[in-house]
Length: 226
Image (cartoon, rainbow, N blue to C red):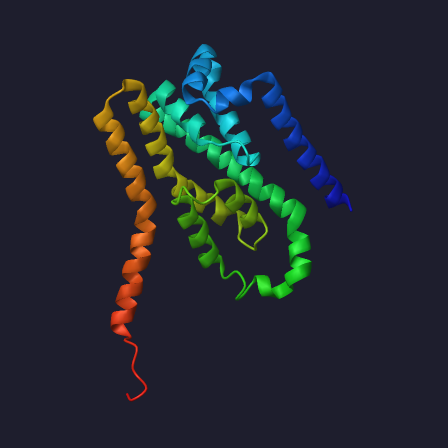
């Protein structure tokens, strides 16, 4: 019962944060990378902290997209620092989402599935770590949902943190780089950044297809006569 009350309180806090951002006009600013860039620059030394906080909120409150924030960070602070602020905010948000799901929902899931969570249904610690890592490399998979869902599994917190950190580092840099190049207005560099992001997205898929193809060659399917 106590965890249910905490769940209601957390959901109410998230809804309240969303409404506050919407009514204050900050949500519209967060959806516009150019407007957000101008705002964080105006905030001076508080700008980097604002990027980290906004990225964290965007991860926790799923309807808020994080890509415009990452682009604004790159445009305002450049490749390296922009990527660092984006990475830090995304990491904090992911760990917070994992912790919320683990605290609120883990016992319920454990009661439903019991020991099946340890084998078969979800897999080993190594398998779960690999799933989280690969999911971070695929932008079309919801970062927020993966973070919450991982908290419901037996995955160790430190494994989730490391898989997330290494998985989002490349895309954080590329998004910040993309924002920097958009600011410079150089079309060739922007196109290169887009292609690099696309290649990063397709890399895990290509590796999976390559391994499947090798496995089929090593173990060819034999006909009934054989």
